[in-house]
Length: 142
Image (cartoon, rainbow, N blue to C red):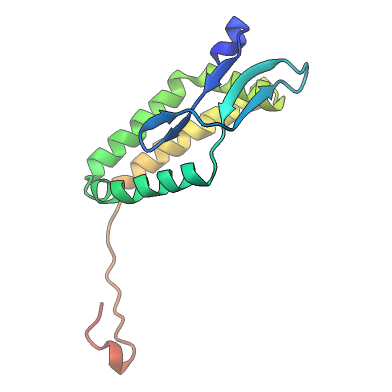
């Protein structure tokens, strides 16, 4: 995190419905090993949750219309972003939870890998046809 290098606490707004949002409820994050204030985060409550859910509902048709290639491209871009910020993310985990740096790097690497796997899986979305006509009421259904 930039705060770790500069020594100045950084502030993180909540990302809701495509916008960075400053909320009234905030929490200072302090390193467990020395109590130093390294970041402030904006917390979300019921109103922000409703905004996020409504944005998700509005975005669902566009997300559903994405091709497998587009989904894979988005997921690979996320993986690349995690990879590009590997050290920053690992150091952030160390400061927030006291996690050893080797374990923090392993978690960041695992997160990157999860997005890579998800990208590969979007290219393997096949269909299956299963007969459901096991009862008279469902005759001819698949």
